[in-house]
Amino acid sequence: MADFRVDDSLCTGCGLCAASCPELFEVGDDNKAHVKPQGTCDKDPDEIVSECPVNAITAE
Ligand code: SF4
Image (cartoon, rainbow, N blue to C red):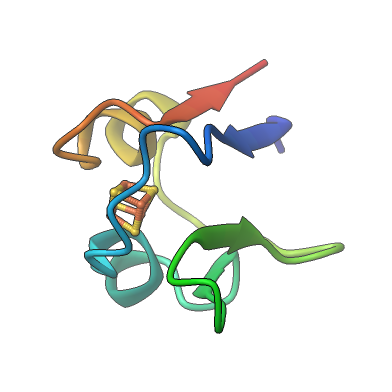
């Protein structure tokens, strides 16, 4: 499992990542996506990264 990060300065809180991978991302009260501790998603990391419309997600 890749190590995912969300750049708060870019995230618009659209919720697409949380809808796509609900066990990995959640949108907080700050209207920013956060990576859940120990979160997982079966999708390919490149696909997860590419689904963010503002390129706020990175994977290492
Ligand atoms: S898809 Fe991108 S912009 Fe939308 S909530 Fe997730 S990280 Fe933020």
